[in-house]
Image (cartoon, rainbow, N blue to C red; front, side, top):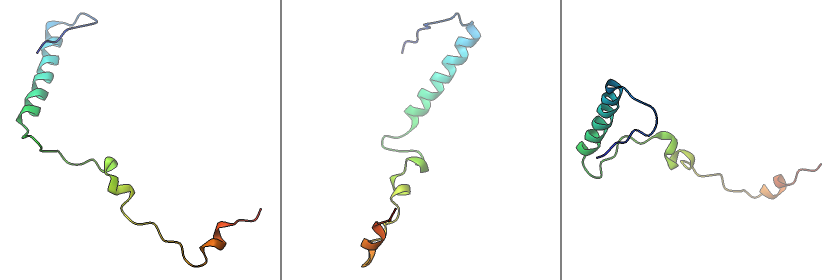
Amino acid sequence: MTIKVVRGNPTPEELAAALAVVRARAAAVAATPPGAEGPKDAWSDPSRIAGHRLPQPGQASWARTYWPG
């Protein structure tokens, strides 16, 4: 793995801190078994939006579709 500094002049301490974060993240990803997912985010869950069925139109539903101006 190669990391290249594109802008700036980091101090050796800053570069060591950045590398420690990258290595820790890579170790965490490598430690998770294949196919294992973390907890699902509620915002991205499609069942949150379509969790219930919409009401079906009734016998007089056509009368509610027209709103006189």
